[in-house]
Length: 100
Image 1 (cartoon, rainbow, N blue to C red):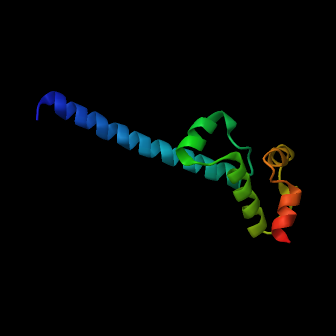
Image 2: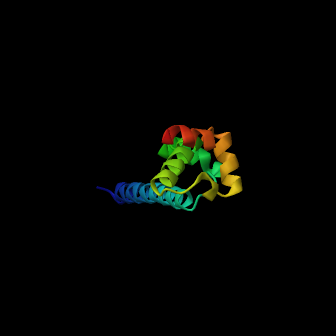
Image 3: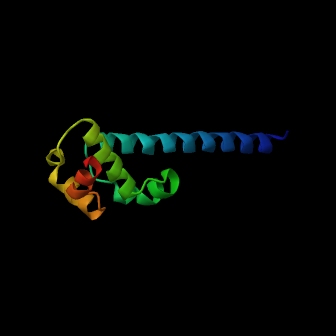
């Protein structure tokens, strides 16, 4: 193996490691955002939807499921998050429907 080939192999391994860490970063960021009832990060949607396959609807649906398992009310959502949930069609009526 030449030095150039070995260098390319090291670069490829480094890129694989970075991409793996980048995925974990976005997964952790989404988890933190969901736990703290934050808005869906639309500015990163190209990465999140394509790479992690998490749409705003699935994000807010899982947030609502978490609220239900913790037996919190819909009113525990911050106003801006509740408004965004409505935009994603996961509003109060959807929550009542799931509970019913």
